[in-house]
Image (cartoon, rainbow, N blue to C red; front, side, top):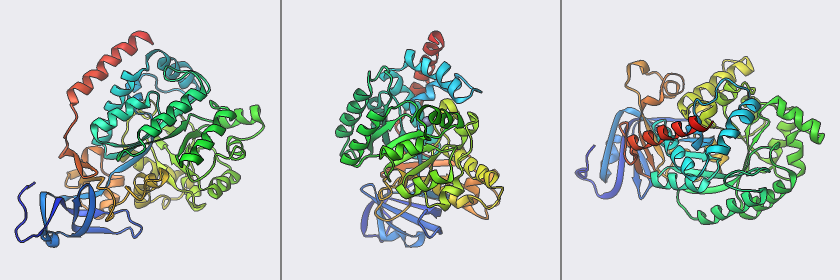
Length: 447
Ligand SMILES: [Zn+2]
């Protein structure tokens, strides 16, 4: 790294990153070799060959000759604060896990401090794993917003809505009102945005869903919801309402391009048509689905129907990590198994799920998701020089099928460097780990 302006240059810019490879994730699918990304005031203003980069006088010039630069990952679904429940209750089915372990623990433990410390732990892990945008859904989202703001990570907060009370709100109306107040508060924030996160069809009744639909239409904000996660959930919906959850949501008018359906392991051809016609988004969480034995999302079928599919880790209590590198590999591997077709979800398509498709699902693809002139400089650098990544025929293949999150060297959000060669720029690792240990003792004593 050098802060000395390059000789012979004339255009002063904040940052130039010169790399061995630039994986732009633009529709052409091209990988640029020996290119530089030029950044000023947080935005990408040029992409050009390394030997032409001296037309710019960089205040900072970062050289990553053995590395690939690519858009930071968009973790499109999670519950960050649940990192504090990581490993608390494993090897259980979804409803047993929720009813007998997670919901009782949440009733006893969750407050604003829990969300703050849990989200900070999650942010630390996510930066170290290449995530530059995370999409969250948890109680006390105002604390998650503060954690994201403090640590400069881009985030979408889907404020929770449930029919039953929690420490955060007493009624569905109160959940929605608090969510909309937070939306107003962060409406013009450069990194933080707020949408509504009704938990699931089986925990939110029609009246609040209609209110959520109206708020989404009025403010043009997203609706983020767990949907068709298990066969049991769909069967129960048919028993209680006479219809499958997607038909109910369709009749209530919730499905649109702003609707994000998380999981979708159970899906009929008619439901694929409903989602496709409405422009709804699907967020695939393969490792959580595997761990809870929920089922397998038919990614390839959804994509063939023109549905945008993004990728999320889900919470660390059901994964148990927030590692988008392993998540995109898992997505590719199980897509092949689901289709009995080794050509299903190839490496580049898997990487799209974790980058541009995530940005599209959240409606922020004009801002992030690809290395494109004009977009925010939300970038990561992956070191491809490690022995386990040799020889290097194809950097995309290497990232998806061979790399680990430990190979991610650097991270920038809006041009601000959050990690420099594995060193976090702003986070106090010792303090965050210590807070997690204190919560572990407290949770162990009261659960
Ligand atoms: Zn979830």
